[in-house]
Length: 127
Image 1 (cartoon, rainbow, N blue to C red):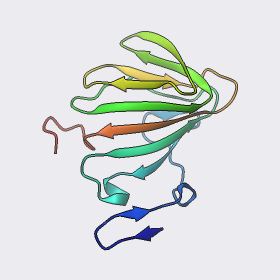
Image 2 (tube, rainbow, N blue to C red):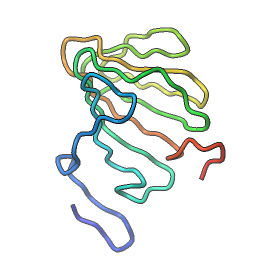
Image 3 (cartoon, one colour):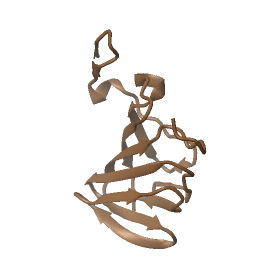
Image 4 (cartoon, one colour):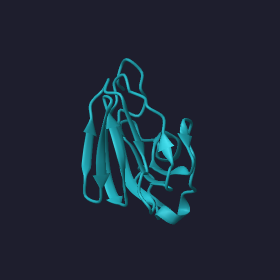
């Protein structure tokens, strides 16, 4: 990783280990690329996720956070407010605060997608 004194950096994705975050199951893995813990970001949580077939995140919602999902490969189901939608390569999903959602890999290969979340915490008052 190359890091500047001002906090800017260039990091290769291979430097970041895969993690299974809470309420993610069956091989629902993510690489937290930019977040407060590893980048001191204040407004953005940016990660790449790879869900193996049948992997999923439990249904949930965020109080104040907005999220964008960008599907890079594979296909799955995105549940939004109780309705399932097939998602696949090049689909972009926007989730405003308060919308219950879940994503699962219903396909035959890995489901790979980017997730951008802002703000970085789901406290009632954004940073």
